[in-house]
Length: 133
Image (cartoon, rainbow, N blue to C red; front, side, top):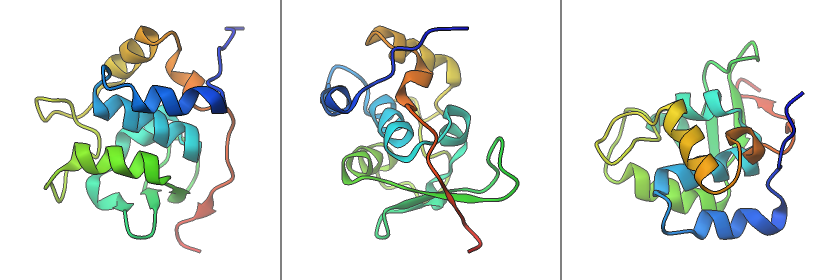
């Protein structure tokens, strides 16, 4: 079994505020940590799946769930997501500086750069409501 160095509540704020890390990675970490999304689910989200006004994100086809799930988006994560999205109205939510969808490999690399594994940003599963409810 792989040991984890789970990100604690006292760590997530400084990690999300670390300007040396690209905003798309900090937004990913916040989305995973605060909403409980799996990395694959967070990376699959489209710009149209985020309701900034409502503070929610919907994953239309989650990896393990049978139907769409909705999760909360904190104001901190929403601020970073707005920066990453810019004026885009569609396409992948999380993109790199070249405008390409953020890769799992890049997410893993940046998590390691700050001393964590990518799964450390999902400290525990959260309970989701069905998007259809």
